[in-house]
Image 1 (cartoon, one colour):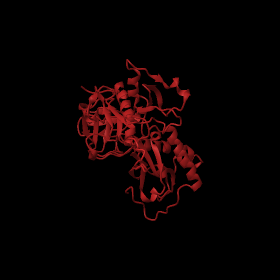
Image 2 (tube, helix red, strand yellow; image 1 turned 135 degrees about the vertical axis):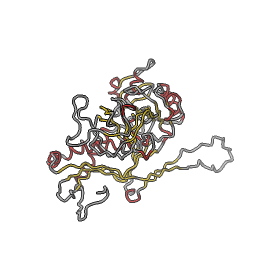
Image 3 (cartoon, helix red, strand yellow; image 1 turned 90 degrees about the vertical axis):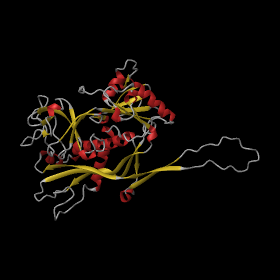
Image 4 (tube, one colour; image 1 turned 180 degrees about the horizontal axis):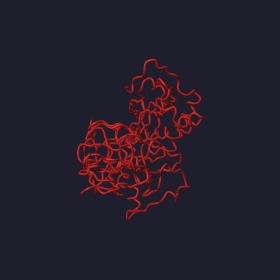
Length: 428
């Protein structure tokens, strides 16, 4: 049955009662505040009329340009400073997801005994946090102001030696100052003017261990004011926040690539034993491998991370591909052309989708204010959906929002993309 087709005769009821819906909506928002990294660096714009129109117009007035020529004594009227404005149009999208479990699942019994809060703060809440954080990341990475490691012109030109250098921070800070970026006071509840860099743990390690580094750990100043989620320290007047969300695995130059030999299903792919202790997956007759077009041992090595991604979107993984998944190779079978992964695939993949190993790209966002708008026509909220299958066995718990993450003030931040240092060396 197609995803957008319902069985004949289904009777639909409402979601949670209004009071509960409001309460659990707040829990979703609490989860976002306490766990998200990139969303707090956006500026939120709510317009509930946009639920009908599907569009938000965000406008602001330019500063005036003073005319500093002297005024004559005989001047009676001044022409006045001209006021003008700019606006951006935000076309909202419906976003959401659902968790489906059997009525006989112990999880349903647990939640039905009054612990929907546990679900909201647990798997469902984390799903929404990850979802919105990825949308925020993708909006930030569309920035027109970018620098690349080694002085390269673009991401495709990066090589494995173009790692992060602290001089990039100095240059980015200077560029922001030249654009009159004020600091992060727009998202901080203090009056301190400062810059924030959100980047990966590996980039932060390179800054910490640099020969000329004057790194200060967050524990040294943590009690003096508000600390951002994930903040780990400061260097050169810039506060650093870490997240692996900006570790773009295999997004750079391709080292090895092949195709899936046949479509895969969610739940497939995981090895029978991982790291000598884990037994991933739910057992049964599920395939514990993926099959590719060629002998994988001629392309990949055990321990490397590969990305399975949509062939129709290009030969490289892209941030806009919501179907992509990255997994570590646990083992390979040369004769059968199979690869066993460290975790099950959580999404289906089409026949001939790409399997790619390439240069990791580490993105760093240094900002002096919110440059992405989080536009909301309908706040993300919990859905306790009715059972509609003939045996009333499948329980569904979901969330839905009518939102958009979009570039708003791109001049407020600078993006730096570097090769970083991969956990395992790239083949020569």
